[in-house]
Amino acid sequence: MSSDEKPEVTSARAEFYGRIDQDHLTPLWDVMKDIITPEPKSGCRAHLWQYDRLRPFLMEAGELITAREAERRVLILENPGLRGQSRITTSLYAGLQLVLPGEVAPAHRHSQTALRFVLEGEDAHTTVEGEKTLMRPGDFVITPPMAWHDHGNGSDKPMVWLDGLDIPMLSFFDASFAEPYTAEEQPVGRNTGDSLARYGANMLPVDFEATGQASPIFNYPYARSREALHRMARQEEWDPCHGLKLRYTNPRDGGFAMPTMATFLQLLPKGFESAPYRATDATVFTVVEGFGRSEIDGEWFTWGPKDIFIAPSWKWVRHQAGEDAVIFSFSDRAAQQKLGFWREERQKN
Ligand code: 1HN
Image (cartoon, rainbow, N blue to C red):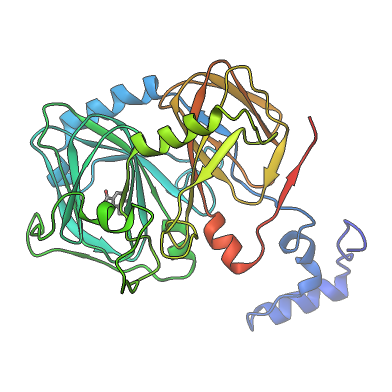
């Protein structure tokens, strides 16, 4: 576009703008430079939350309110540039959820897609559409749109996971629907592990027909994903920007596991220094193993296990691993690629 300047507001123009304003009209030439920017311009800021700082607040919340009363006992991670909007990035919601031993988070369903990434605890469960899965640290669990889901903790330790939902996207489209189930827990009609056996062995039932766009696998266990990365690492072939990075897929078509959100697991070997990278999908990272630091939009963030950090859209990111590190991440890349405007750029190291 021609220049950064807006056309001058002469008194005749101002008088005209005032008159058409009453008819709910406004001149494009006065706002065009603000709405069609040459590059992404976002309120979303780079930020890191240290798990050690968050955990005591979460446990305190555990004493203040039950999972039953809260429905979901979650502390929302609000981007410092987007306070009050329940957003971790412009298009995504994230929070830390606590389920204490003996608790139930009651069954409900909604049009938003949810992902869980387990940070702490062992063998608490979530039930999705009649199948219960036990969760362990590093497991990536999906709740598809309008799927009934409830959580419970039959173990003797608190369970904490990172929730990621496409709430701001559904709000943008005014497409939010939600309803409670008629009981606290839905009936379990399938065996634990059934969907992983059926859809997660690089095979599909011979006459498989997909219902909905989300993956029919709803727990991608960390043990398997980690094994894949560590085995691949022996080959010593690193992507300059990502180290080794795998995306979670839907076995139906090899696409992302969820329709709106993309999820990834990457390994950065000890001493690795990635080349600067940027993309239009603002990304939420959480560290599973290892220590390191990342430079995002010119600022360094030092991270360790369970820390959560944000890379906003189109800001340069580079990582340095102090020891072998495994990092989970999610973004709206699945939606952006379907709609055809996702973009990335790499720098040479
Ligand atoms: C939800 O259903 C869960 O099921 C977590 O655990 C967080 C945030 C907003 C709306 C629904 C869950 C949520 C949520």
